[in-house]
Length: 103
Image 1 (spheres, one colour):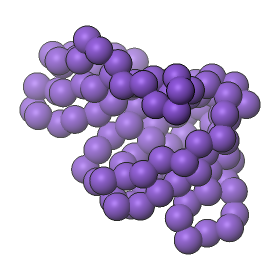
Image 2: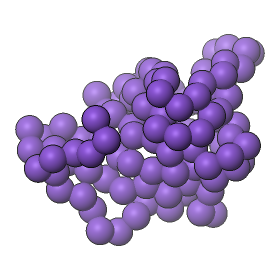
Image 3: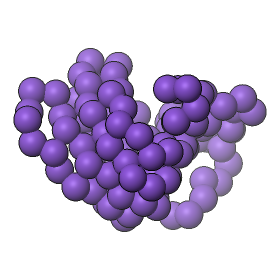
C-alpha cells in the first residue's frame, strides 16, 4: 500500500536528533496510530513506549536491538519489530523512509 486513505495527519512534524529524524503522526479512520518519517544518514538510539513495527519504504539500515550485540541489515520492503519499553540503535548511510506501526 503506497498511501493511507481516510486518515488524519498532523500538520506539524516531530523533529528528533537535531533534525536527523523527522516524522508526522497519522491516525487512521479505525483509530490506529502510525508515523511516517525519514531518517537522514546517522547513528541514533530510539526508545519505545509501545511495541513498534518499522516498515522500510526506501533505503537501508543496520539495527541493533536492546540486549544484543549483533547488527542486522534491513532494506526497502522489509520490516522489523521492537518490543515496548525498549530501545534500538539504528545506522543509516542514506535517507531511510519508513512507516512506524504502533501497538
